[in-house]
Amino acid sequence: MNLRHTSAALAFSLATVLTLAACGSDSGDGDEPAAVVQQDGSDAPDPAAGTVLDTPFDKPAVTLTDTDGETFDLVEDTSGYATLLYFGYTNCPDVCPLTMSNIANAAAELDEEQRERLRVVMITSDPERDTPESLGPWLAAQDPEFIGLTGDFGEIQTAARSLGVLLEEPYEDEDGSVISSHGAQVLAFLPGDDKAHVLYTEGVTTETFERDLPLLIEGETP
Image (tube, rainbow, N blue to C red; front, side, top):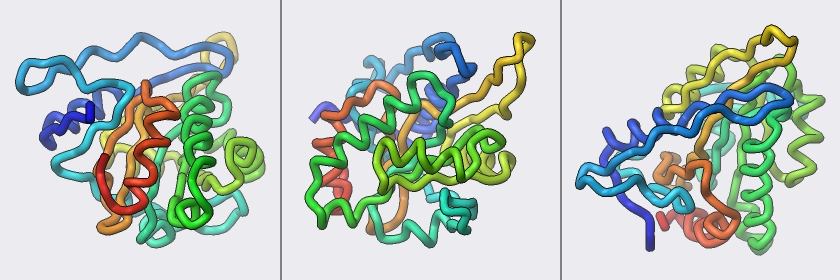
């Protein structure tokens, strides 16, 4: 495997360095994140693979609103399921739809029993525009089983920060476009302890998720 294990400190450093991407409704992302060096002096982990965390993250204790307008407790309602969590928004021109599409394509390769044991959750980082009515159809076009959550930005920001994902509140640029940020990683929580054991960054492909999802569903790290 080309996964590289990392200490908790390095994992958090990786998360915070690669965590924030801001883009307007009609523009691409900003500068590329700085390279991360392993403690042994080697290059950063392969961006096309996940990073197994020596010290996993706890699942954020946050209650938001799903695309049916119902209350959704992230910890309680995903307990016991392999769960992929991403912070993004529907007006993102490139990274967010690509990330969710890669996961959707991989999930489509699972059998019915495997798919029932997987939860894919996207929490919007732009809740003012991503209402349940707008978030629902956008996610359903990717995969009707995907779960979309929206709510108070402060609560979303706090939940993201607990995972090393630093989100900035959306704002209007001088030209009138809305600038929003999104996470640069997907966190994979295992069903056995509901903790995030694997971090996938922006370069991860459909093939990586196809390989890893069956393992994650069984409670194993790749």
